[in-house]
Length: 299
Image (cartoon, rainbow, N blue to C red):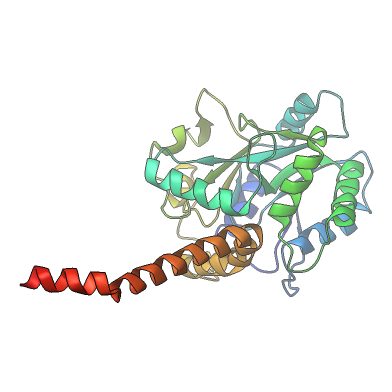
């Protein structure tokens, strides 16, 4: 099994991805190192070119570079994948996003998700962690680019969600977080006991004694506490390329046009109604009857 990521440089938890991969016997393949970042869909292009040089039957696991930590060895991950696909190598195992138990934060994140992203099989899948057979992954990337334009400014997350929605039989979603545990807590850091995560003697478990193979701290989620509990040196320089506030602002700028594109008619109607209501209010203020009533009240 190959473990692959795309990174042009080191940032955030990338040092821990490398350390954890080495710890569990993975040979981490890093694509795009030292190159100029060309957008999220570029990751599909790099993967497609890399996969062409591999055995079509090889199993490949892709992970994000800056927010992933490996928890198990290649043999365990491969065995889990084969168990999930049940002999059908034409299917891809992909992660889903988990949310915190904080009602306000959870509701806020889900609301933002609903404005931008699409559910597949009633789940928000994540393009940053998936595993499949080479031949099937090559077909996936080719078919997505044929069906949706793989423009540099395209969003890989939305693209794979839309594709999964139309071709759901080609995907298995890791709903029990057996392989991928994707936690989403952009607005806060992970504290002890949250997400039903427990760490004993360096081993991470989730909910009903599930032992994920990979933890993915999506959207700038702070997992420093988990890193320490897993036994890694937290003093390692992480070379943060941007602050969390900058990350959030950049995300807003990226997704606002998408929200407008999807809801432009609703937004237009809402603005029109507000303008109409405002004009009615202004008109009533200057109506003779209103001025007369106002004068009487003053008397």
